[in-house]
Amino acid sequence: MMTKLTARCLCGDVTWQADGPVSWACHCHCESCRRATAAPMTTFIGVRLSDFQWTGAPPGTYTSSPGVTRSFCGTCGTPMAFQASRFEGEIHAYAATLDDPGRIAPEFHVHYDEKLPWLHLSDALPRYTANKTAAGNTATDNTTVSKTEDQ
Ligand SMILES: [Zn+2]
Ligand SMILES: [Zn+2]
Image (cartoon, rainbow, N blue to C red; front, side):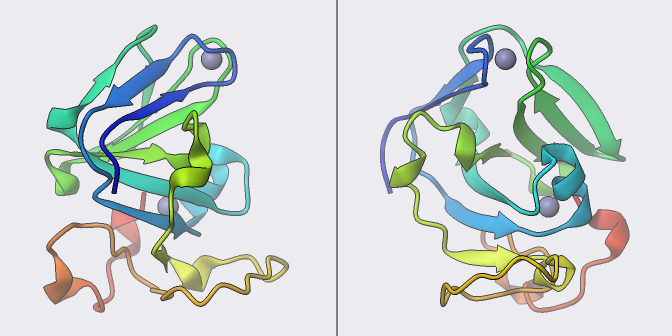
């Protein structure tokens, strides 16, 4: 999709850059992301960990569930990234923290069954009830993923 990505938190202490392509981009409606971002939904991009590096202050981390690490700015609190043992070799960054978020084109929704009733969306993107962010994991995309594996 593109070859260079940069992002920053609200105060600018935590920054990252990625030299590889965006693997995918999607909207997530799960309750965990809702609480972690204090927003009705959030938008992720998937980047290979081998392409990704933190370039500013080291982020704080929080283990939101077993095997799941969320990174945030310890100064201003901006959520920065999501990593899970089930997505080995991949980091999920919040598209809204990109220096140029308008360049991202989200491709689908996940956890759409958890979408808040007052949020009305008119896009024609595919809506999935289970987590569909594992690249190359299409065999299980349409099956139900346990709630305990939520983000
Ligand atoms: Zn900050
Ligand atoms: Zn989520």
